[in-house]
Image (cartoon, rainbow, N blue to C red; front, side, top):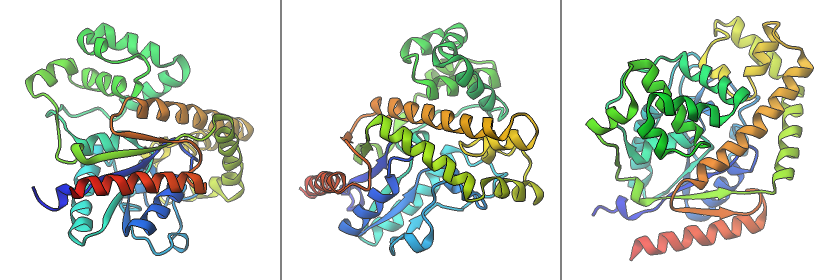
Length: 319
């Protein structure tokens, strides 16, 4: 076993606005670490106001990787992100540093820890449609759709496991072949990273988190969210660009297209983000190797508990 395999991989995850970046930077200081972004929106250049990217002057000298790496029009898949992340992890660990993955895109980390089957080419128009169904009719409706086209897989997924349900629907409606059949031909396998990936999941009080989400939304508008979107569209980024499907952009694009009022855009963004936070918690409850931290990532008690967990994991890997 190589030295790299003896190191734990630490992922700081949790719902949006829970202070993941704060905890990640604090842990990086304590364990000589570097941060790898695993938030899909933060990979886009030119997208700043609603992304919670940590400005360079606030990164406290901690190297941050995989931020601002693609244009807003580029479709960065989870598999491609995972390939890039593996290269960064190898470089960090070769220099004797601690790799810390920080962000809220659970499917990115699943791509890093899972060797997927050879899937068909996916129609990119499908995901936004399924996400709209999720928002309007709920996860159980999507699960019923899956039960009609892929009963074996629907039986394995919980109704609220919306991310995997959507993925399965994408595969079926892109290829005409159920995902369960694709998987039977080439089952998914855990990668080398899976056995050494551990998740620190932030769990602040729900109402306090929702208040923080609402306040942050208002602050984003004050800081020029609309102007940023207008400038991107003026520079040639189409309103249909994948980057604009992100929370914080989608509803304001709809406003600029005349599809809703500004007040409606603000309130719907707050609602969307609160729902997204709930779905993120659901995702992490289904994962293994999780350590739940009650509080926000900037709280000293959370930093101390997270530090103790990381120290113990590193000690165990040294044995």
